[in-house]
Every structure is written in C-alpha cells, then in structure tokens.
Length: 117
Image (cartoon, rainbow, N blue to C red; front, side, top):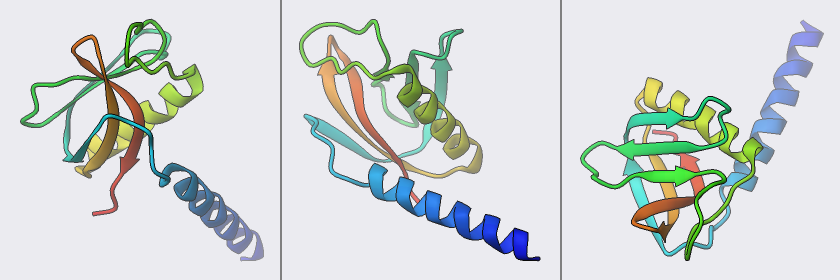
C-alpha cells in the first residue's frame, strides 16, 4: 500500500509540474480553441506532425523541415510529446487549444494544450 501511494503521489506531482509548464502563454500569431482533432499524421521517424481539427480546413504542422517566415521549428522530443497528447485527446474525445504562427499557408504549432473537459 505504501509503494502505491508513493507512486501515485509522485505521478501526481510530475503531472502537476508538466501542466504548469504546458499551461504558460505561447508567443504566436493566432490560436485555435476547442479543437477536436479529426486527423493526425506523422512521418516514420515521428519528427514531423500534422494535425487537423473537425470543421477546420487548416492544417497544424510541427517539426523540422518547415522553413520560411513564421515557421517554428520544434525538436523531435517536443513533436513526440505533442503526437502522444494529440493521439490521447483524439481517442478520448477531448478538445485542445493550439497556438500557431502562419508558415507558408500552414499553421506552424508553437503550443498545444489538451483541455480537461
């Protein structure tokens, strides 16, 4: 019983810290609220991510290879984290907030937050 409580307390502390980090304001030119993800795609190395929301014709992209004005490059670890969060939110039916900057007609992601609804 003691080990279970310690693990539960540790996981809760780590999750609270992660939410505090993720919940800060992102510098972006736009945001999309209450996005219900309808489409997720990633390349084979999981370093590029593309998301689409229900009823939204725009694509939200992240990862290396997107260059130009307004394109935000994320490292591979960040892309993997967002991929896991996006998959979890799509499978659970949760909505998300996405912060982005215009990148050659796509929306380059600078932040992603799953909402607890």
